[in-house]
Image (tube, rainbow, N blue to C red):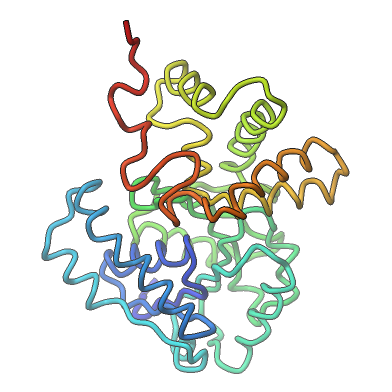
Length: 300
């Protein structure tokens, strides 16, 4: 697929990461968002990425400079969408917002434009009736810190043409993602089908007073041989996002345990301790305690 213009709808946590990764990969990329304030917030997020890329994947100054030249911002949907080859929707995880966003694309989107949703829970069949080009629509879900966790989960509705799946795979590879094909639609995709039960188990242990976050993380890190525990991941996700997920679980299941977890998370949200985004959550940033080599060592 020949790609000259990529548009990211929404400059939030993942939207800004997808945009920067696309620009870093050499594609002309535009972030569209609904207001100057939203664009400013996206800019602030992106300003932190060069140092992270240099540290995590040894990016050079030349690569960073080229990424900056390939990235732009706009609040004009028409100028963003016109002549776009790929559009990635990364708006909040609410079906009404996604529906409204897709319907606004109708006057500007091209017949051949590949339209991708970054939804982490909604499946393509739930969204496809809202989109202007159904044969060119599917899901591509990214992990947080996508330059490190470079997986793209590909999911499509029944009847989606193979050419669309092939083009999505090609785009994923062009931005240095490893494409993962999900053969049947499932909410949560592969990653969150595994990840969220683990996160919920940790949150439940904490909310019910069985163990504190630090002890849970230390146990997980040592036992599983990984570099962060569930609460470290929650700080990256954002505790406001975690709160919204738990409340959604509660609404759907009426399980009081989800409400108990949400209430505990609400204390952090109300104190603006949202995690990495605000510099403090369960840990302090930019140098969280779990990154200290002594975090999981025995102290005599």
